[in-house]
Length: 247
Figure 1: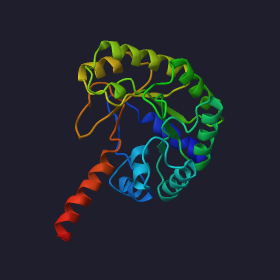
Figure 2: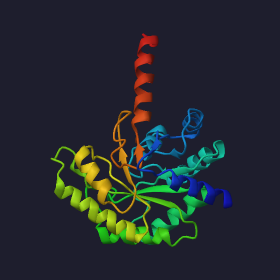
Figure 3: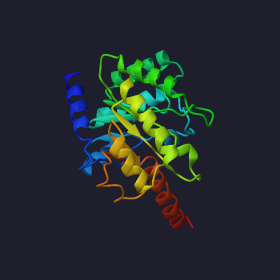
Figure 4: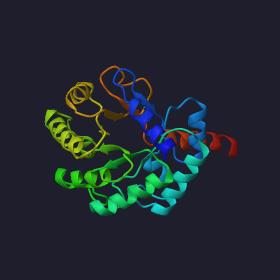
């Protein structure tokens, strides 16, 4: 536990607006080892990648026992802080989510992503409901890093990204912070003006997801994730090269 706490503290300190933490998301022990070898400061899973690499669709379709087994293999093979994407927490109620995170902590992780998207439909949990779920996690004895993901922009992909959506994200960021969240993750947000405003007014570090290198540095972002893109690009290489050699 002392080593886990040390990794947690190091991980927290990596969230820096001047030098953001870059997470090239992985999906299994092999990709985690490679990420460590090329210089990753921390390891983060992508739920989409983990699910698809095991033959499942995203959306908590992969059995939780398999999620834990995969996490344990990752942690056994590297000596870096590990944060895991647990989607909506494999549970609707605060108690169910709390039990999920307890097992994540027991496996050795120091951080989680937990989203406010309701699994199975396009709706979000109310801010109040999501705060109760975050509070339940924070009641656990280990102070795991809670990266609270909000899908306000992600579910509005294709619609104009505007100040109204930003206001909702800031409202949730403030509420989630008060409930115990350590960071706010806003996938789908790509407008630089809105990102700057979010970083200026958010009470907790901002995490943005990108598709290509070199974006969103120097504008206040503290954490940059690549989500499922490393896995998708790996599959594209496999497919393209495979087609060439198998013809």
